[in-house]
Image 1 (tube, rainbow, N blue to C red):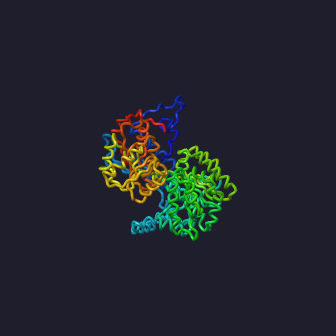
Image 2 (image 1 turned 90 degrees about the vertical axis):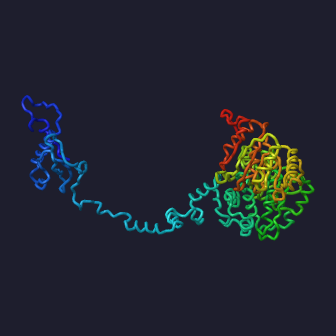
Image 3 (image 1 turned 135 degrees about the vertical axis):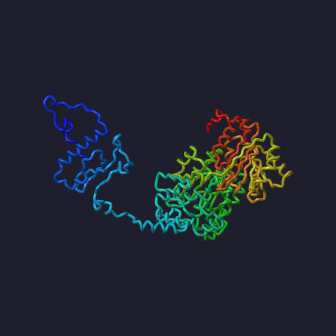
Length: 609
């Protein structure tokens, strides 16, 4: 930029200071025309040029006293400010510039030497030749191999990393994937298993049974986190919270078998010491189901021990003489209901003084079914018998952590590890819920026979509320269809109930007609369809009913028939549940049902659970 105009020029007239009466007075500012501004500026430039003539001869070529010049400013090689001017034609009539637009207007033109450019001395981090080499390499790489370039930059994924290369971040990502949360007030929690083979926790023969014979390709989330924490020494108590059908039986059965592997116990010692593991479950059906699943492993070549691992169950419906006979050879693993176990202890049929592992399966259902007092009494007897046992371990598995369960855990478990496997999207039961309006039973049966059942494979469970309805429905199937049907309700003897379950599991019966007794705790594999032929009187029973399908990663369908005489509050709960729990995005709710029970009215949809 130019040097400021001399103060004498600004304050005085004709380039001098005011004198006499004019001294101290400043001329009133006035606006100048464009031409006048140019003349004033030229005078100032000429004055500046005259004052700096000496020593500035090399700049003379850049300064000219020509009116109306287009100027640009810059720094000379000596550091002084120079002004460049170019001739611009003038229209004398208008005083405006003519000709083409000055393309250099508004741009700075720096007059420095080429060697003063500091960028010439800078070397780029990556040369253009190197960038071109990488570009050519990437373009020649096959599409399926390009991911390795990113892996080399980002590092290996936690699924393929060696165990000793796993970081805390990797373990956190794994837990997030499987919705695993852990907590322990004392000590650390073991990391989950990535594969069955990891850490060498499972003996080779038992591992072969799981992966080769039973086709367990990889552990479920609850199995991944529970097994390493149960077998880690020193043994700690554990509470596992996971939904029904998530694989909890294997989660506690495998650690029990790991502890017993290589343990030589002849028949006489089994009779004298009693079982090494005790598993409590709320219902007879669940007890027998657990027994069957464990025997499915122990009857195979799973250990080097020549003595067979004996698994025995004791439930109601059998006399004490029958139970005594089943225990005549002793047992290694005992599965029982709390009430029947107390009967056996009080009659001195068995002893539990040498138990190493106590498992409470479906503990929340024991409370729901009114077995809380029996459960506490059983735990008290176990604690009295085993309080001197080093390494004794209590494992509690539940679907919900209710206040009653927390109270029991505080009373009978010692600083337990808490494991929660949340029902994220990947583990949420994939059940499609369909609610249809059908006012009478004959119409429902016709729809079942003609439209519903032909679309689904066995096994199928049909829930009803009354025993006479079960008998009537079974007769209709026998008379009008070719389906093989079995019945399960409370009036059946224990032997009949076990026979009915066996028929359905083995495929000899395609359909089971059952009351709510089959809604809780029973695990019938691969149920494709649940039908609520009669809507349950209690909303919680509905949830347990449809939970018989869509288990262990499979998808399922639940169809509910609704009439005109259902409970209004139950229907409100049903409407909201079907609306909120729609993992498949295909739920259906009949508009006729909405109209009959005015469920679509927003003022009626405020439900407190």
